Image 1 (cartoon, rainbow, N blue to C red):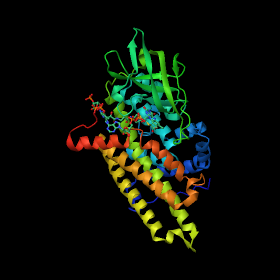
Image 2 (cartoon, helix red, strand yellow; image 1 turned 135 degrees about the horizontal axis):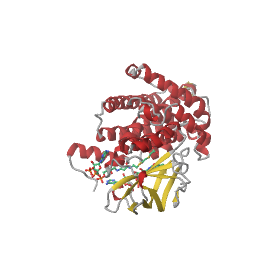
Image 3 (cartoon, rainbow, N blue to C red; image 1 turned 45 degrees about the horizontal axis):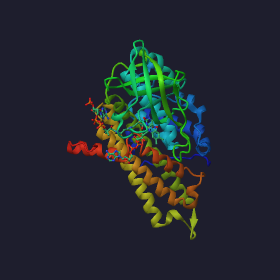
Image 4 (tube, helix red, strand yellow; image 1 turned 30 degrees about the vertical axis):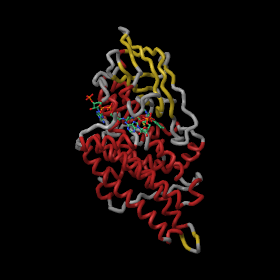
Length: 392
Ligand code: TGC
Ligand code: FAD
């Protein structure tokens, strides 16, 4: 791996919209990434291994639940700071951003938003520091885009609940200490349960042979008559709006994160194009290379502006699900396109681990599918425009 000399493109002077605190957060996370992650990420991705030793460092830089309140050991930051942290992590690797966004938006957020005071105090400080890691179980083998059809279920046994079923494609599952699991009660109503590693009948087999998100651990959650204590039910939510509310927060983070991956591809392509000589000239001097670079920068800039405005609305608690969908969908597609163009500029070198391009491109093939596929987000926008759901 080459020395990480990343500099972000800022064609529309977006930095002027950031506060001094935002810039400090960005510089701190970027410096940490350059020192601790950039030198090792390619090797871990090639070996399809999550670098577990970085978890405490992620906690120290405030990557876990940055916008949750300080009284639970969290950062108490605004939503733009959260976005910036996700952007800096995904600039290095989508799998690392995944680990942080699952922990913050999909595990800590529901415990904070829907949990009891006792659950908040028990779990949030340890999750914020990385002493404890979590995962989020919504998707099932037969229910991905349609999570409302889930069959994982629990029965009230008087002094405990009995949980049965299986979840699939779960980020962080193989090493998580706890899982926030969405399951139906006997009345068919969806609830959230906190399942702890070590509970009898609970296993987390790892998913192997992924070509994407290789530096992130993915697995299943299998529940075979798991006795879950009653105090582990999230008391303040029922229905699909519980998990969907968490997804709004995670999808918002992905919208920022995808720009990070795109910026890294652009930065690498620009540097390569200036250095690579063909026909006695740097390839950056050819019009066709300039077209690629100019279009990459244009799309990144448009995504930066879209996401900035979304962050402002999120800070004001006014960002809607369709607005978040539009940004997630647009930015991930944009990043995939930028990665493909960057791969071409790098020629044959673009397929090697010497450059981050192929890793970003393969990662983004998961990002475009998880947290709602590209087409599901289009349908969410379509429903918003017309008032007519076209999901079924
Ligand atoms: P629908 O009838 O539209 O809604 C059912 C109930 O849910 C409410 N709701 C929301 N509430 C809050 N926020 C949202 N974003 C919400 N979306 C829906 C809705 O108001 C309703 O509430 P109520 O009280 O009226 O019952 O639901 P539907 O069954 O028609 O499905 C709609 C659809 C397809 C849009 C939705 O289910 C969907 O978005 N599907 C995609 C599934 C998805 O995104 N899965 C993600 C799994 S987690 C993951 O991928 C983590 S990857 C992490 C990483 O590594 O980074
Ligand atoms: P399907 O729902 O089967 O979709 C297949 C295709 O059909 C897609 O193109 C889709 O757009 C299309 N389609 C489906 N319904 C419609 C429709 N109504 N109209 C038009 N087209 C439609 N889930 C979790 O719960 N927790 C996690 O931590 C998690 N991490 C993940 C990590 C990775 C690496 C991956 C790949 C996935 C992860 N997921 C997780 C699951 C992810 O959210 C699902 O893969 C995603 O929601 C899509 O579900 P599916 O794969 O079953 O595809």
